[in-house]
Image (cartoon, rainbow, N blue to C red):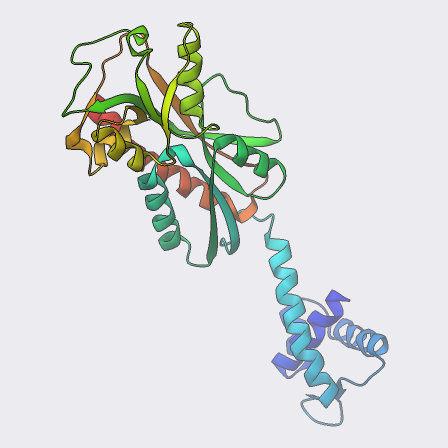
Amino acid sequence: MIEDLQAFVAVVEASSLSRAASRLHITQSAVSRRLQQLESRLDGVLLDRAHRPPLPTPLGTRVYESAKAVLRQVDSLVSLADESAEPSGTFRLGFSMGLGDGVLERVVERLHADFPKVHLQIRSDWSHGLVERLEGNALDAAIVLSQASAPVPSSLAVRTVGAVDLVIVQSRSQMPFRRPVRLAALVNANWVLNPVGCGYRAALESAMGKQDACLRVAIDALGSELQLRLVAKGMGLGLVPRITLVSSPSARAIHPVAVSDFQLSMDVRLAHHREPGPFRAVLAAAQAHATVALAPARKTRR
């Protein structure tokens, strides 16, 4: 029936069977046959053939408008797997909450500018939650944090974006740890950390466990900026991404703690479905913009 609708729309727009045939690259008799099939299916006359050129009947006018909408949907459906098509429609992108506001802001802003026909839906969550949503088809892609050894489900494709260095921080005004120390020296310290579920916290808890100690979490506070403000006021030690510390308004009130036997770096990965269709260009752009957003802190570290 799609071919019959295409023939009818072509005849109405070209005002000629011969021009419609040329447009569709078929014979004029084939156009006539398709029109007859469509009229038979709909049990009505769509063209006034007594008029030259043939004009749509009142029924034909209504069918023409509906046929145009149907054919647009068909074109959209076909383009879903066409990687050369211009990206359009809704793209659901997840961001790990550990990345910091700067990365999310840059990527979203640039994608809006690069792909005006794409409607972005953004979700922030812990990385494991984002991967679960990807597997359940509730997201199209996600920028997640993981340790290098962490596996990724085989159903997903993964692109490397960069890495995030973590730094233990203290209040500059109090400076309880002025010289390099080992992790064991921090066993009795209070901490200001993300709630349970954060990969940073889990890695620190694991390291503390190897010291036969437990973390003394004084404050569960979601978000690195809030944690930095609390650390600056002497509420405890913090563990934050270096990229967040570099750009934070609280940076001058914070000082890193040099820990000789604890260094933590998390890989940043872009995970997505294996057949993104026209959204492949969006994925490439997200990867590029996230890489640029992560670069300043890496340079500062060197």
